[in-house]
Length: 274
Image (cartoon, rainbow, N blue to C red; front, side, top):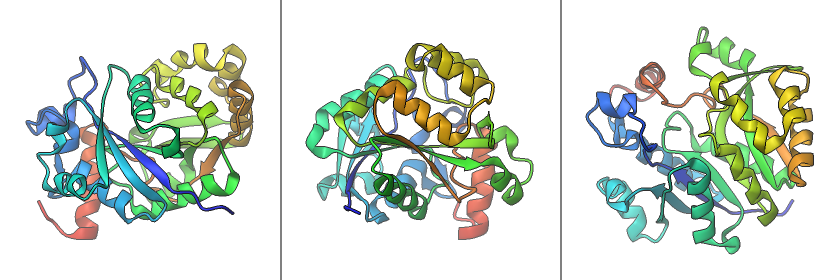
């Protein structure tokens, strides 16, 4: 297996025209600046990337670098030459495309994560990227079985995106890989804003994947492996879904219920650092 070193892209911008519940609650312009158990979300995400040996350089996609440079850890990474910035655009798809274009194909493969993935660990990052490398995927995404999540954290169904497929219920872990120039087209999946577990937004996939693929997915007529094969056909690439054995992986700080859930568990593990 040929080792890959991934360039990480961290999506940290505030969605245009959207008031974020977490940022507003804590009086911050951006959710990524909000401390969770005493440390800003963005710092937690970046530290995990630095610890993961599969990750090399890091790009933070945000409206203005000065927003993130308020955080000393971010400034230290920039000074060390590990971290740079890309101007975010109005949509996630355009922001991803802009970050990849700025980095260039020589920076491939790309690992894509979000600044609110503050429940993730470097172990989660490494497991996913090792899986992507092993499969030789052009593009990949991470999924976890809902039964694992419910067994570990009973009653969390409302804070994880649930996808009913033929081989069970799955939750998206909000991490992705784009490993070849042909796979760049997959950023169109984010044209509707991501959040694929949101029933109101699922129809935004139709123009991207086609009506038949959407039908198979929407009505649970395909397994997770079958869904990856369908994506491979649509985009004419090798697309892979990586099953994650971590109950923490699909839980991000998207709103106050998920924020409070994560913070409570971080306090149990780290002690109260608030």
